[in-house]
Image (cartoon, rainbow, N blue to C red):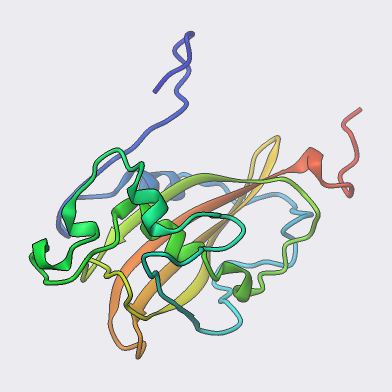
Length: 199
C-alpha cells in the first residue's frame, strides 16, 4: 500500500517451508543499526526474557483483554475471509476448530503485561512490524498454551524508540514450540515527558 505520492505505508511477505529465505522482517532486523542512546527503553537489553512463563488459551466467547475488547466469536462475525474450520471442529482436517491466523497475535499479546519489560512511561506506543510463524501448527481454539518472550532487537529513529519482542508459543507443558510472533513495539519519543523538545 502506498500514499498518493508513492510513499510506502504497508509491506508484507508470505512464505511456506524452511527454505523460503529471509522474510521481510528478517531483512529489516538485519538492517537495524544499534541505537545511540535510549531513554524510554534504557533498561532493556537484547536477550532479556520475560519474568515468567505465561499460560494462555482462546475460547470462543473469551474476552481477550483491554487491548482486544472482543472475543473470537465476535471476530468471526465480521472476519474478511470466513472458514468453517474456525468454528466447527467437525469440518476441520484436525477435528478441532483452529484459531485464524489474524487472531494468533491476539493470543500472543493477551498476557504480554506479565513479561514485565521495564519500559518507561507513560508514552504512546504503536505496533510497527509484525510477523507470525506457524512451526507446528495450527493453533486450536480452547487449547492451553505456554508463552515465552525475549527482546530480539532494540532500535531508534528520529521519532521513535523500538523494541522487537520474539514471542514463542509452546504446548502447555512447554516442551514443543508450535508458533512464534515477532513484534516491533515503536514508542513515540515526543509522547514521553522525559524527552526535551528539539531546539
